[in-house]
Image (cartoon, rainbow, N blue to C red):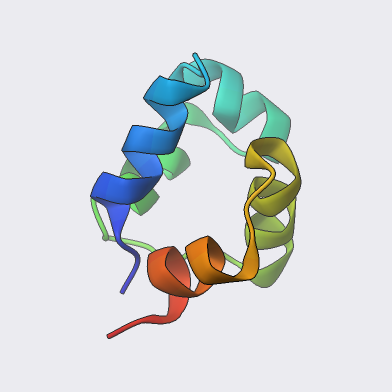
Length: 68
């Protein structure tokens, strides 16, 4: 399950609104809302985009997307 609080913190630290981020990911605002509420999982392609958008290192990526 995605650590959405850490992802939301990255959004805030980088000044990214949900609307901006959904556009950069190529998904609707509603779909991003679902993902940020853990109703849907992020796809591998979306995770790759998020890594680039937020310049995340391997530790951050593992923590947010792959830790239990």
